[in-house]
Image 1 (tube, rainbow, N blue to C red):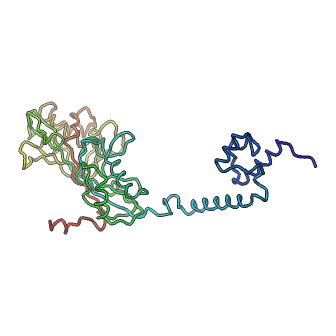
Image 2: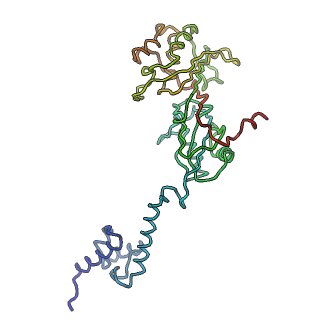
Image 3: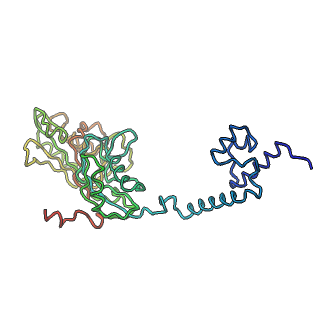
Length: 358
């Protein structure tokens, strides 16, 4: 009986290997050298657990190897069919939703949304949550505050596979967060809960500090105004913005949303009781455009100090031109004060009764 040539033996071995791998191509190194290749190639295959001791892998003496490979492929297919890889380790589902109320000082952060090479609020929160549950989903926020903007009641939600109480989440995340971020409360919600879709009302507050000299206590909390302001003109301009209007002119160039109609339910100016130098501008509405509040405040200040003509805000609502408005106010004086949701969750901790006893 004539012995097969070397090339023929390679083809036979390769077909056997491809049958064992379910029709997938064999590694190029193994295909090129086979099981009769150079010493270094055989050593590499041996380190990878692929050496067959010089025998074709499809012979009867390799039956246990084929059975093991078939079993692994069957298990892999079954995991994908039943969705275990999507659920996480050991097939646990992310079916427990958590809603957090978060307060933070945004001076040292590059905004709320996660960024690749910057420190953000969402990045710090995600890192703290993953310390407790490495399989937790990506967090969702009710408002994407800009760099330097603060918040007292930001709403954040995520899904987890762990059965942890709201009190456990609120207290357990504390050691893993910086001092500039605090968990105000926690509640149970549905796993697919998105605070932005459930937000019905938001309220921002912008603080103006009327002073000729800097005040270190208001340095990161207010915009210092060294000019004289006619507050009567500010009230008149603010009244024209209340209601349902097209605020296309009151947004930054980066905002390219087609729908720009928004409803402002309130726009009030008041003096702070603890510091008469400060003017608080409260802006409340259903939704806001990018930099909308800061553009409103900057326009009110420019009208009050004589840089813009009276009625500039009303003209911008009609014409839709950003050029009719004033500057964009700095971010340091803005704070997200309140977010009202149509579903505040269950088992809220701390509860209102617990806070009343303090």
